[in-house]
Image (cartoon, rainbow over all chains, first blue to last red; front, top):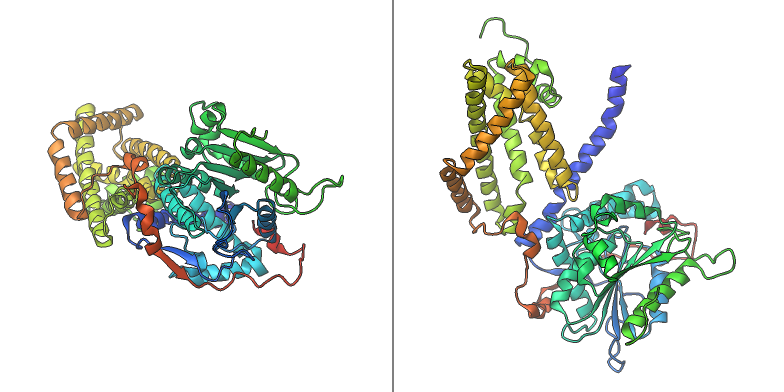
Length: 328
Length: 249
């Protein structure tokens, strides 16, 4: 009996050890990048068309009033979106903010923006995982989410974060500069970090701040993030927090987010009024009832995605309009 | 010692028992001619694992791949030297405290076995959980040395506790006094092996900047590389709300 129990325990134990091995090997990508082992190129996907939006806005158009960079959640393998909801969200945001350049073709879980499906050795593995994710069984697809989640953990780690976040800040700057962003002009930048990308967005602010003259705002869309110095480097951090967002429980793993650690960056940002929590009534983290859910409310009110787009658009509008009062 | 050789388990089994702090393994290995070899192998593996676990600083200093391996081996050797010094300290302190000369061979075996938990030191690289894992391993190692002295050398628990803590204090004192030339030698060797000045320390990481000049972004255009990827999915045939694609955010 006892040995049978031991044998049963062996399986989860093996799974944990394999996971830990994977996790412990992950930082070598970031560290090797810093050491210059992989060169200093920044990759971008030539096939990505960004929907119907031309890569460069027509020259006769007025200069952009704001750059909005959307960082997707941990489900992505490249700069291309996999999700109809995300696509719908971006389309609505572009319609709502005609003066802003809304960009999403960035892969925020790779130090040089190289898509998983374009990686030199493991491209086939990720291609396979992607097919499983799209066609099922979904379990294999979670390899992608796990891999990207580990990158978020790197961004939140005090040893690797400063390196990873510099890499991401480079990729972000490169991405917006491909859309004619000029670091010398003070056009505001808005980083929207969905889920785990909340950490990525906040982490990069420290460095973007040093390289540009722009005000930089972070909009965390159900973001999972640690208490990072970037919270105090940003002009303002808006944290959209769905009342049914169970994924927010992850914050309890980040000691700096505990309310009694008064000197943490997060608590200081809240006290100084540099971070605002915006309650999103009835919204979950993802899927149908999530921030980007498209079903109209039971009482005939606006759908989640409409409310989310409206909230974010209001933040961007008030920040780009002088003398406006902040939304509460 | 060659008379009545006890049955020795295989190396992996020995390792497993050492990790579980199994009392019998300390006795068994002391009385077997392969005991010291097993203990030494555990120390070596732990040394390699610890060197990897501490390799972040080499990357911070931008060491080249070949030099990385060389620098790692230097660190591993220094861990083994550390094992000899730790054994010597325990032997001296133990003999003095118990008022009887401890057998050198037995001390070397049980101290080596107490290194077993450090075989997992590599996992300290795990993002975000590294500190936690370091803490667990430190605690585990501390308990391991006390258990090893207690069961392996027949010390009373209080003696084992006292010997290991006094030993630790002696080691710290040595590091700051007569051990300094050795530490300097180690640092010099590591620098030579790494091939780059190891000026950046672990705690400097937040102040590190890849680009010292503000307008470095002018180089960005030259660094862009285009890759052609196949589209991740075909254009949607219809808006099928039930598709599992929606769960992928």
